[in-house]
Structures are given as C-alpha cells and as structure tokens.
Length: 167
Image (cartoon, rainbow, N blue to C red; front, side, top):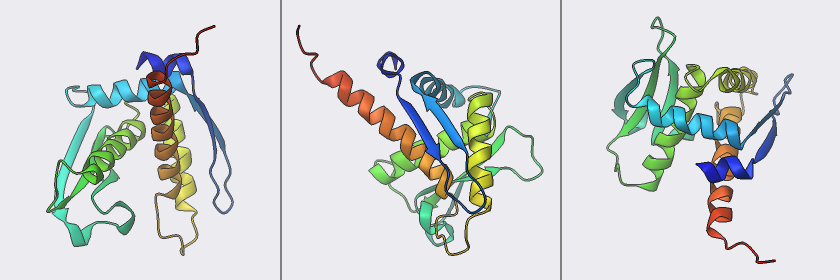
C-alpha cells in the first residue's frame, strides 16, 4: 500500500450522463484510505455489511456475480447490502473482483471510507440516476470509478514490480 501512496496516482473522472458533469479527482492517498476501509470493514462495528445469496437469474446483467445493492431500506445509514449470485465459485476471478468492487462501493456509500469517498459515491449515484433508459449498466458511473481505482492499483503494482533504472 505504501507504493500506491508514493506513486500518487491522480485520476480525474468526468461522469458523462445527461444533465450531469462533475470532475472528481482522487489519487494514491485517497485510494490507500479506501483500501484500508475495505480491509477494516470485515471487523469494524462501525459498518454493517449484509450479504444476501440470490438466484443468478435475479442478479442485474451488469453485475451478474456480485452486486452492491445499496443501503438497506429503512436501515441505519451504515447498513449496506451486497448480493451474491448462487451458485457461485468463490475462487473464480469474477467473484473475487466483483466482491472487491462491491466492498469498495459499500465503504464509499456508507461513508466508512471517509467524506471524500462518500461525496464521490453520491455524485456517481446521482449521475447514474439520470442515465438514459437505454443504458444497460445502471451503475455506469459507479463502475467508471471502481474501474479507475483498480487501474490505478494495477499500475502501481506494475511500477513496484519494475526495476528502477540505475543512474
């Protein structure tokens, strides 16, 4: 995680949807904060994650394996629901990456990852709410953010694995 902070990746997203545009920038320190929140979410009493197992046919097409369904209706603000398709293979790449994406979104949406990530999540969710009905991915903007985060993590890992040129 230190490498990610040292590289200080900066990512600016323009959330392209009808009537909405926001320039949201986050870098290595913010991504490291999000990753720490995801790691802590498993044991912290400050966030409640509900995992619901559902039939694969009931999952949204854009998140067929794992889906962050949002804050629990009528629940406390820190209660979030993640849907997991059944049957599923917990060792599959689709499950692993989908579950990480869902956890990151849950930590953002609940505010557990901090106010900056909550604001980023809320802006993306607001943009998603204005998507044209023909857009199949109803989490389009939230997925843009999680993809940018994963791309930054992957790039930081590659940079850390590459030998430094000697002067």
